[in-house]
Amino acid sequence: MIPNRTVARIFDVVALAAGLLALACPPAWPAGSNQLFTESWNQKWKCGSSRGSSGSACTLVGRGKFDITANFSTSLTPSVLSDPSTQFDITLGGGSGGSGTAMTGYYFKDTMSSFTQKVSKNETTAKRVLSTQKCNGNGNQCKNFDYETIVLKITKAGKLEISISAKTGSDLNGDTFENSIDAENFDGDNGPVSGDLYLQVDLGSFSFNDGDSDNVSVTGNATTKSSKTRGSTSVPDLSDVKIGGTLQ
Image 1 (cartoon, helix red, strand yellow):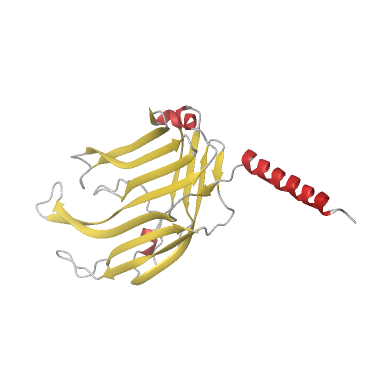
Image 2: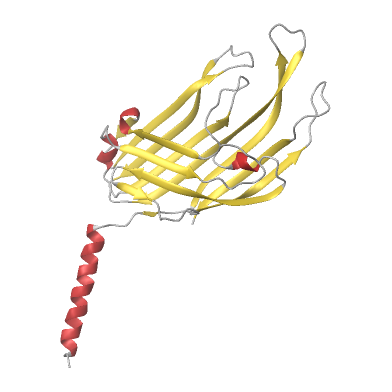
């Protein structure tokens, strides 16, 4: 029979080994609120005069916006964001379905060489602004348009903060901005909507993907109503969608 003090010693060693392993391989997990994103999508008629025509023409335009906020506890140091070769890769997609057939889902991949860094004593921030041109229906009167902002922050304690805001849809000329994450998929629906997406994040040596393809739960509401525009009796319905996603 093993003496009680020997058994106690064995458990002490096991506990110490487990503690050292946890320190050597710190886990990567979401920190704070599980609210991951909010998104809106709506359709409107935009009317105006066309080149070479005395009348006016109307175009159905679908546009929206989204905000993504994710916080993770990691073993990363702020210097990771100052290394031009560090790669940031994020996927939030999968498509909930709904009545629509849109190509949706958010994907971004690039290195810190394309970001602007701000270094302070306790943290480093990296920022990237994506721009394009927004034009009228004739493809002119174009102006520069910032449609997406990505901000990454790492603190001395290893907290990774990701903030992404973007405009979705297209201009009157059909030039696209960012893809809808999921809201456009519910174009044509009425009432409560729901579905599932997945989130994957990679930054340097850090990786978050729990192996669950449905790790983001989507809920919201969609409203679709009939519409009529000048000189037309049969036109598409107009949809207004608001959704949110939580990390499971």
